[in-house]
Amino acid sequence: MVEVVRGDDPVNAVDRSDSPLITVVARPDSPPASVGDRPGSPPTAVPLADFSLVDPSAVEFSSSYDTEKSVAKFLAKYPVLKAGEDSDDSRDPDYFRILPCGPTERVCMGRADAGPPFFYMYTCFFSDLHVSLPFDEFTMGVLRTLNVAPTQVHPNTWASLQAFRLLCDVMRLRPTPSSFLCYYGSYPGRLASWLSLAGRPGRVLFDPFAVSYKRFKERFVKVVIRPEATAFFFDRAGRSRFPLYWTSQPTGFKFWPRPTESEEEVEIFSFFDALPRKLPCRSLIGAYTELARWAAIRGTGSRFCCVGR
Image 1 (cartoon, rainbow, N blue to C red):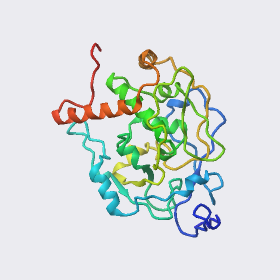
Image 2: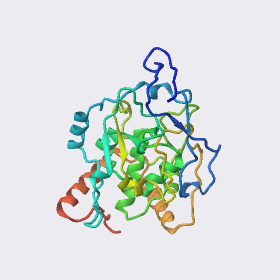
Image 3: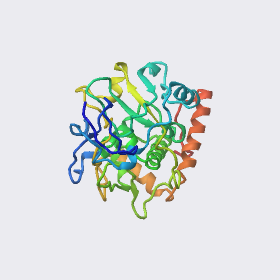
Image 4: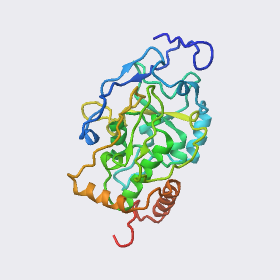
């Protein structure tokens, strides 16, 4: 147990509980050109004794999902688990435990020395953006490349990631972290906070999902990874496929190098470069989700081809 001295208000209150510690990860000043698709995990996390490297606003909010009843009500309304695409790929709900958060838990906290691995998720990721578990390789690759935990990514950036992935799915293209990130810049602040990718001038793919994304910070749940689901989140060496807990300094870059080695990536760039700029992110995600729902009902699969492709 580490005593964390913070002051008198909710942000600076003294916490002598056994709640998990924050974790931080060091990063190089700039990523090498090939880091975007490198397998593995971020550097070893170093636990902190206080919140000095975290934006105070991230410490301010506890979760409104603080009872089993509130979590159960949410799960009954919104799907969290990704359905298998065939009968041999069923996703066992017991792979994950979606738990409420205690009054002292904060979204930027990390794992204590004991206990199963977990990560936090904002409920808007499920309800608004239709993110599902387990993550695909593309999503984990972007998180790993940016060196951030899921809740460290601002919902508007999560929405852009989702829209990019879904458009690739429509076109039967396999997205890569590099093909997504080359349209953005990353400018993390001095303190660990929510990361928002900035669209490069003249190449902004999507409008924001919400001009002002309100009330997401106090709505998060804990996703506990059971042993049966280890392969979805860890490689054979036991390294996490993306940071489960907040890191101190996400990867920053002004221009991400555009890869040209892969024919598939060249095809991705040809497709997105030909699209109009500032596509309506909210409408794209909503339309795809509705199509996927009807496809599931009709048993026609989860992918859709554009006319003429």
